[in-house]
Image 1: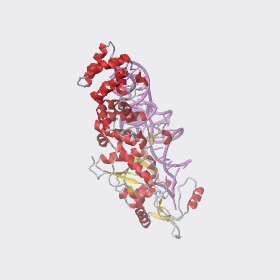
Image 2: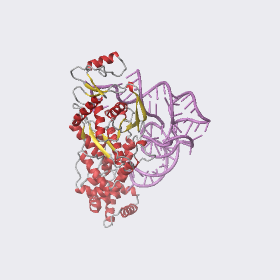
Image 3: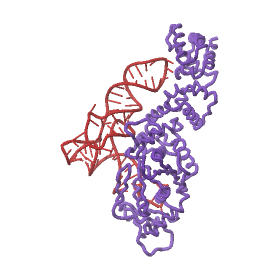
Image 4: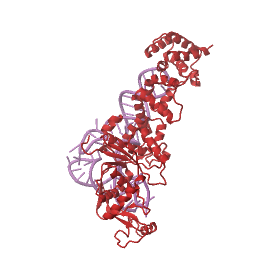
Length: 465
RNA sequence: GGCCCGUUCGUCUAUCGGUUAGGACGCUAGGUUUUCAACCUAGAAAGAGGGGUUCGACUCCCCUACGGGCUGCCA
């Protein structure tokens, strides 16, 4: 733990769509860093682009963060609501001389670029003394010589020659702030100490630093993390399948597993692969973040997911399942289903890697009599096997209904019939679940309980006539 | 085009000048087994290419190739 000033991080999404998996990871890193150091994790909605921003998107992003389990401090800040402040800072810079009024029109700028290919735009108004009336943008009076050094916590020192940078617009001619200016003002005002964000902002950081310097503000620590790529190594896009966090949720990966997997994507702590939130908070560090873009690997995600499902408390798991059912629009569980599912969870969670896999295995506990027998399972139910089920019923009628005792009884019946355990497990499985692929028959019996198990057996025995 | 960043098994990664280059997922082969799985054991599998620096480079420097980003009065 740091003895220094408290850490303040932030996640600043543009509300133009759902929460992207890359954004989710950026948010996670910021959250982990702040929470691991007793700091604050803030949220800012970058909604200055009125045309593209929608309240629905803001809602979707917040919902995504909540699902991922990333709680933020205070109310989310709307960047748009702060445009007065942004303008005020721009004017202050104007007065201090670190910014100037630029009367160039977009057409003039385009023409200038035409004449000066591959050069950053140089405004003729930068040093003008005779200023006209009319609309103007406020531009930063950036240094034209020397270099700006970004001391990035992930990328190391990054040097950018100042003659590569143009005088960026702080305030547009319509009086609205540009994103580049607004971020700096907001991050400063919000007291952000560590800016952890996507790699795509790295180059722009040089210009943002110039604003910090011009205002005499302390620069935050910058950490630019590499972007996430698709399985083919290309930039993540729709054609890669799931890219929205909600899609991963719908696929049945628990949030705790997503946190683990996402944390490991681009960050590492030695050979540690599987960890819980407490460990992640303790271990997470900027120094452990890699510099190369990482690819999404669903196979590994599944493995991580399976681990976390396996170690989850039964009660927690049941809640996760219920939430998943709600998310996917499925019918909520009845009390009876819950009471049968809960005792089945210890066996089920061992093998399931995702929630739908678990639900598939849990089907026996969710259906009610009379259960329908799928074709493959029906094959196991002939007159001979029905006879064995009858013998088994008699044998376990008064058993104590523990796993061991049930198994012992089944083995005995099998022996008496001169067959292996498999010969009786088949029909038993069919009678209990109506399926050929299920959890262990004894696990099903203990979860179902004596009454229900015997009733299901009886249903099949009676069919024999 | 210019500038910036990146490049270790198929994938995620460890290594912070000296290791038989380690782990994990996946894959292959065995094992376990009442189905499907899960699980256990073993194995194959990597430093983009080329120059330097050094007694010694995956590690430091340069070049090339490839990938990505930025280059806007978008965010």
